[in-house]
Length: 156
Image 1 (cartoon, rainbow, N blue to C red):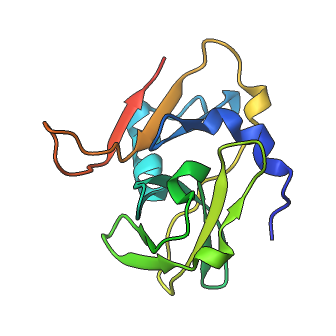
Image 2: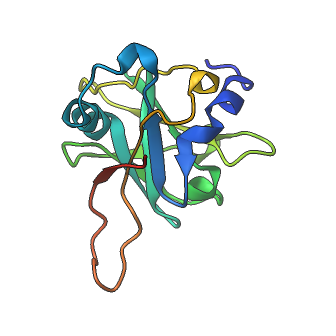
């Protein structure tokens, strides 16, 4: 399993309540915004539960997928589902949720025999000012938009 220390380098990946940001450094600068959007849509999942939010698929081992999300999304013991891009729901076993002390990050797992894309993690400390940052996620519904729909945008 993943080390409990590595997510500290990913702090810039999580923005707001329900949005995960994907950053692409110099090595991937040739990607267009549309290409980044396609990758982002494929790896971003909804997490349904007491505090709905978003996450990003970061690992697969056999049929077990690991999703990085904000700890506040899975803050309390409850029933949670990961909802993938094909609208399939996978239950999360709450006792398997891993929260990181002092940082708003958590890992959740779901099991599926289907093949889902995994994000390629980079070194967030290598990002330089002025490089593009893209945000992808499922914002919390509002009075105007009553359903949580996938959203993607360039921050800078």
